[in-house]
Length: 360
Ligand SMILES: Cc1ncc(COP(=O)(O)O)c(C=O)c1O
Image: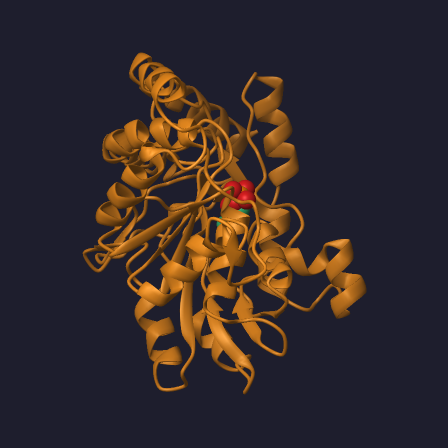
């Protein structure tokens, strides 16, 4: 990753600091309006982080104690932590055999009378199979909450993520496809009631300045961060286009590389935004070491699936074998360098090193 802080963002930050209220200033509301419009949704409510966005979204939908939320064990652990923060129980189903996202056919058998929401994660910027999740949820009164924290601008069936479920949540953490140069998050929805509740939850539970309607949090996006976010949002499409071009370069260059399996081919209705470009290898650790010896940093997202993290083992009784595909992926995935400013030469160097490794 290489976070971008350019002159235009510095100017926007400076203007904001000198002219706006530092908290809940005008840029916050403009950023929300622009982000909602970008996603093709009616409302957007900013928060202090993506984790807070997920938690507050669930609470705003009145999902809490005695409720279950079905999600993926192969994600960043904030996904299911947010469910627990909201007071509900996370339940997991395994991911697709040939992909990285929650598998709708495996999710089906994990739904119970208590399931209030399915929370697919558009992992690595790859949209989840939303049609199938909608079919699963529709006649059971189950809502869909998109964890779109890694997928700003990705499209599914001609619509941007953020407009595909009841509610969607985004993170602006500094590694994401767009950031606010600090922590931040966004809840996006067409549901006015959810948006109103979320605005109150993120602002101490306020109904008005000194009255409250719920027990809320201090989880607002700072004005200066919103001002930077507005500039980044305008650049997001061109950055995503660059990421897609780099991903295609990797795909072509690594087609024949025997040490790695490429990410699944894109389906016609999906436009992923390659927050990460993730290959699989049965010799992952040796391959990562080979790259590192040659000055290339590759990362692992994620080496331990959520259900095998210590608190989940202790509190929910998960162990090895609970979700075999996620566990296998945790041992095989490797994220190659990708960001909009990476050069063709750099992509060729990384690909060459991987191809060499194949024939070593
Ligand atoms: C899939 C996913 N969900 C949730 C989060 C939580 O976002 P944040 O770090 O802004 O709290 C992240 C990102 O970090 C993420 O990648």
